[in-house]
Each structure stands twice: as C-alpha cells, then as structure tokens.
Amino acid sequence: MIRTSLALTFVIFFIPVAALITFPWTLITGKANFLYCVAMTGVRSALCIAGVKVEAEGREKLDRARSYIFMSNHVSNLDPPIVVPVLPGRTSVLVKKELFRVPILGWAMRMASLVPVDRDNRDAAIASIEKAAEVMKSGLHMTIFPEGTRSLDGSLLPFKKGPFHLALDTGMPIVPVTVLDTLGMMPKGRIRIRPGTARVIFHDPIEPTQVKDRDQLIEAVRASIAAPLNKK
Image (cartoon, rainbow, N blue to C red; front, side, top):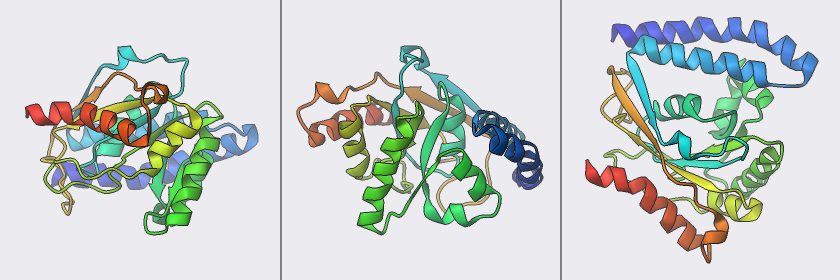
C-alpha cells in the first residue's frame, strides 16, 4: 500500500506542475507534442514508483511512418498507463467523458486531442468514432479497448462494433495488443497496486482490406488478442 500511496502522491503533485510548464507552450505553439512527452514521462515515473515494470514485444513489426489503430484487452486500470507509453509514437485514446470534467486533466486531454466517449449513448458513441477519424487524419495513432470495460476474470468480453467501423471507414490497419499479468496487480474494484511485471505483446497489423466485412475483422482481431491469453 505504501508504493500505491507514493505513486498517487506523485501524480497529485506532478499534474499541476506539468500543466504549469506545458500548457503555455502548447497554447503558444498550437502543438501538443511537448505536453504528450511530459505526460508520458510522468506516467512511466508513477508506474516505477508503484513497482510496475513493463516488457514490450513485437514493436519491430510496425512501420513507424504509418498510423495504426491499437486494440487491446482490458482487465485493469493499469492497462492504459502501461500500454500508451510503449506505443511507437503519439496516440489519441477514447476516454470516458466523465474524465474530461476533472480540472487540469480534462484540459490536458483536450489539448492532446483525446476523444471523449459516452458508452451509454449510441448517438454520442457514433459521434466519438467520427471525431476519432478526424484525429487520425492529423497523423496520430488511436488506442482503443474494444471490450468497453474491464474484464473481472481476464477472459475477453464481447467487442464493441464502433471501433471496427473506424478501421473500415479510414482504411487504417489495426494492431491487436495483448496485455498480460495486470489482473493480479490491480483487478477491477481494487485501489492498491501490487508490484509486478506486465507484458505488452504487439501482434501483426491487420489491414481492413484483408477481410470481407466487419464481423470477419472483429474475429481476426479477437483471435490475435486471445492467443497469448489462451496459453496462460
């Protein structure tokens, strides 16, 4: 619990200090790269304080000149801060709209072109996918957890269909991502972070043109993500 408390204390102090440094620069230049870099440094530091190590596999398969839609399984609140910093480049993320109401954090997420999503409103969810398509046109990746919520036991939940329309509409390849060993570190409903090592596996990109329809695309992505899970 001590490590968790120290990590939380670090985040509480880091956010306003980082905002004081990065917000003026972002507003002046109109570019969020510096803000994003500082934020990722803060995330990595918080994980380190909490005793969480990250091992990434398969990034060498990716073309750094391309934009991708990264889709990952989701069992813990640790998954986003573990996955996003190891991506090869800057990404946007679909984020629960409630988080945009948090002072400073909400402003930072807007500056960084993160996309709010309302999972309980179908029309709003569709609008979020359209916004995500606009963001990707600027050259950013998009990171999505297609289950829409955390799994309690680590098994894959049904995938939401909206993110796959994004791939089909934009023609952007999907990179399936499997996150392993975070369930025991911070399962759903727990506040305490247990130290450990998480593995992030990047699978081969799947081109929307390689499949005949949305359902086949969903199955292909699901099969890639599930493969390492089934070996555990």
